[in-house]
Amino acid sequence: ANATVIAGGTADDSTGYFVQPTLAETSDPGARLLCEEIFGPVLTVHVYDDARWEETLGIVDRTSPYGLTGAVFARDRKAV
Image (cartoon, rainbow, N blue to C red):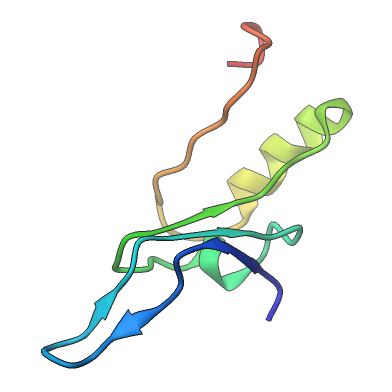
C-alpha cells in the first residue's frame, strides 16, 4: 500500500509459485518491504534526503530487529 512497483511485480502460479523479479520504491522507511525479510527476487528502495544523512542512519538502525542486508549508494566517499 505504501510502495510503488517500478518493474516486475507479477506472479505465475501455474506450476508452483513464481514472482517475477521486482523493483519497488517507497518513501516510508518503515514500509513492510524494508522491515521484513521477503523471500523472492524483490528489491525495495527508499530514496533519502542527502541533507538528512545522520537521521537516515538512525532510521536504518531502528527500522528492524533483524540484521537484514542493506546498501547505501552515494557519491560522497565520506558517507560511504
